[in-house]
Length: 222
Ligand SMILES: Cc1cc2nc3c(=O)[nH]c(=O)nc-3n(C[C@H](O)[C@H](O)[C@H](O)COP(=O)(O)O)c2cc1C
Image (cartoon, rainbow, N blue to C red):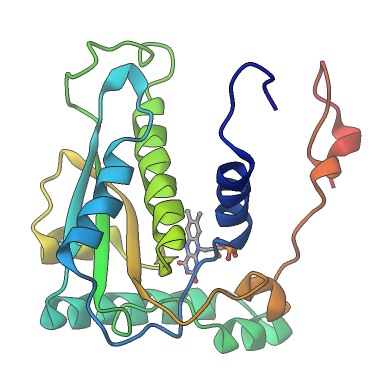
């Protein structure tokens, strides 16, 4: 804690708590649409994320229309069948038991795009690392996710989608890069561990196995 300035203890605790309790949510959405002002707060949180050169390259499509969500769900089903076919035996069995989206259960979805060709920011920070444009959009998504968690709103990221199909369906121009498709809505509560861990797909690794000091060391990598 900075002895000269910091948020008070309750505020600090709230920040760490929201980081620890945020989950990727694919089930248990309530059939209650979010009020517009709440969606506005979440989008404002996303829009205030850090961005390279203050470029603010993120673009958002809020999707509430059920027919559109049904069409996105079809795109998911096709991609998910293909994904399942890439696994064999026990792994395929486990994959088939996973619930990997809440496109129809969540009353609203969010498509997050990145305008990589925008001139805003005058190229600052992008000459050596152009990929920072997309990283900026990922920062916006994380802001959205954490703000949502603090409001009791679950968010689930769905990447099992054929981007070309989504571009057609949502009228996305070619110069925008698809970064995320999110399902979000009120939920009853957050699970205490990631779904993928609970269902035996993958385990979290200890922090100490991914940190090295002064120079990169393979020893820390699990
Ligand atoms: C870039 C990205 C893509 C993801 N895609 C999916 C997905 O398609 N389906 C899914 O169920 N979860 C997806 N997730 C969620 C992860 O599975 C989840 O974050 C991870 O298992 C850890 O769980 P937690 O977020 O609850 O801590 C994605 C997460 C990220 C960051």
